[in-house]
View 1 (cartoon, one colour):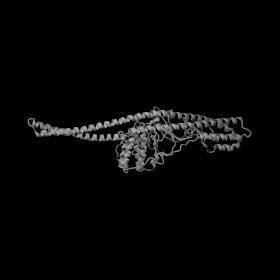
View 2 (cartoon, rainbow, N blue to C red):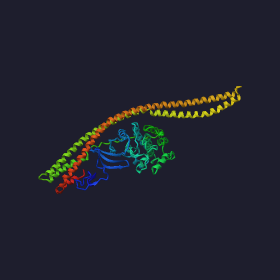
View 3 (cartoon, one colour):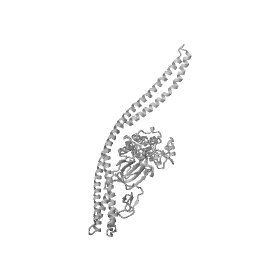
View 4 (cartoon, rainbow, N blue to C red):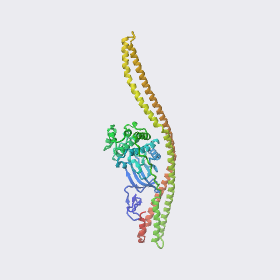
Length: 560
């Protein structure tokens, strides 16, 4: 695309001059700026560019709603894209920024989210270290968002401070859920553009295992450490050094950095940073409950989540519609001023063609407003259904933490009993040697009191050994009973997740239909605007020689 250096109006590449001011057009630095993606959103300015994605300021086509658009380019052989897109759409929670749309267009995933007045958490971390109450409060918000994702059977996959938005009132939202670099890049590739993200990767990730619940929690632990200390727990100048430090299980440096933090919260943080994934909490909800318990033990009152500020929905006609309505009025005035005796047939027919297309654009705008309302009402129903199912999952799992505590208690007691039982064997063997000794001396020809004592000692030891072993086995059976309860809960949750998939399939079809309708209207509007650019250029070209039309040409270039 090209644009006018004076008025910034966008033109197709084959156009040379701007019809408004006659300026020579220049190619856009980013060829996508000024284009419409799948008819749905128009890209207005580039925000960021990484090795795997590009982000833009944009607007929903024809209705002017501001948004942020992320384009994720998929490599050949990328798998799981459709599932990730569905998970990204359905991951609704008050700590996850909602999406307007997630679409796969060819080999590009198009993610559209609202444009909000919030900044990346990374900027907050650059300014100062937070106190423990603030750090714990923000970490709880991160975990609340993760808990919903994990409850719904998904993962974030690219959690880091740049993928969390911090509002001025203290609320926090996760973004880029399920649609991170893990879809398109190897975890430990040695590329400069990947190094910032790799600081938040769990050590167990590899090319065949790019994301997991436990990897999300490791990333959350790193962010918590940053919030508490102002620095990352692991660093390095390159990916090789970073991986070496991740492999080093020494915690002395971590303890030193956390020396100002209450011990229960230190223990929680180090548990999140355990190198072995099985030593971390089981899920976002489990980590959330453990951090709340640690705050209670430490007598820390975490900063409360004030909630996402109410933001009035920006709903206005597309600038293109209002612009062409204004141009149409100016063009009509040009004919009146430039042709006092009446316009030529060519000028009259040119204006007529412009008017007809401007009217069609206005009609498309009204239809787009209707489709947007349809999309909005469908989204509200989708959110309501998700919250209902999320509540069912919460109810099903509310006893899970109690069960896990009972399992932990059984494991602890089983370990103690097992240690006790293991001490008896050498003692029994030693006592048995005394039995053999006295059996030999007596030859069973005379009754020896020492032999009876040796027998009693062995019997007492074996009885105590048996009791310790039975206690260990009883605790092991208790563990299995409690695990069966967890498996029952997991089965119930799986059934609810299946209901969620059915819900998303049904409601997703409605959202897809509304977005397809908006896209079709946007594509039609793009075609009409291209025709209008051509018609307007041909209409104004012969009129530039009329000096009396100077005020009208100035009006064309006036700021809207």
